[in-house]
Image (cartoon, rainbow, N blue to C red; front, side, top):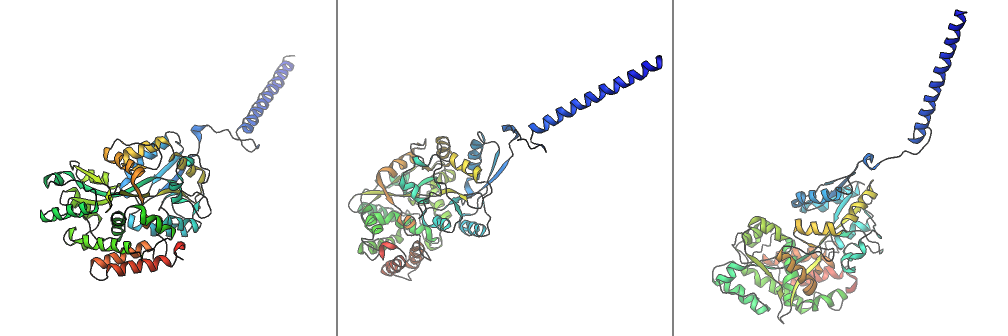
Length: 437
């Protein structure tokens, strides 16, 4: 009897263990089906478990690394799963480095797109992803969007900032010499003469780097050719670079050399910026992007700006969209890249950009606490003339803009005449610029 009871308990124990193991197996199967294991179910992923996505940004703005760290930190407040690295290249090497990488099917996920023709060459080559329909693009003016819009009508870049060029001037030097801000071309020349006679270098300018010369012509040319009147006709093909007024503008550039520093042929960007910041020159014809750089060099410098006055008394600042951000057509993270570009269209980014970069935002309605920059923003709205060397004449091989720069350098070395400069520029433009053909 006792043996029978023992055998019965043993059987009962085995049955209970079998039941428990079967139940555990069912629970395991149920867990597998809910987590997307071999049973084929969909995995449920929380935001905390999102896979990290890495994005790289290419740019020519090596001086902005710390500023973009703040931009990325703001972006990560809403997109913590996207890790962004800002990896710029020296501005003089950027185009070559980027083009080489893109041709190899590589390069950064997002890159700084040169404005107008220079950037659109990459679009035509198929290296840039279209972003038409990206949320936030509809707030920009057609003029701003045109800087990165392809011939196919697709949008390829988010406009970043507006640059303007004008004359900065040292208020202390002007006051010491009893000089008022010029309002006509003749007054401008008189200011230069007075400074020169007083032993003060009037204009911080060097001719070593060609881009400085096309930029300077963009400012001074409007003074000689009365603001927008020549530019409007030029881009329509109603006049060209053989026009006597354009030749006159080149002569004016040549005549201004006596107001440049000694040995100006050997001076580049860093040299002339330092001359102005250290109060060794009274005026500095350059861009709005120089404001934070000058302030870093000499925070005590008391300086302002004036729009370029023409012979008729009209005043202009030369402006253009100075770069957009675009997506590499070969990027493996296009969706994440679009998230970042959409962030660049927001008011939050625009406010941070103006505060940290001290530049004019392309986003409408963004103001600046910097008085000088805020005033320039208003001038761009009311006194703007197009920088047509960048907007319209960055085509050709070499570009017409490059031809102008090279010939102006030759002129300052006494190798070519203003008339020959104009002739070379016209021959370059008519070889490719459709309104001239």
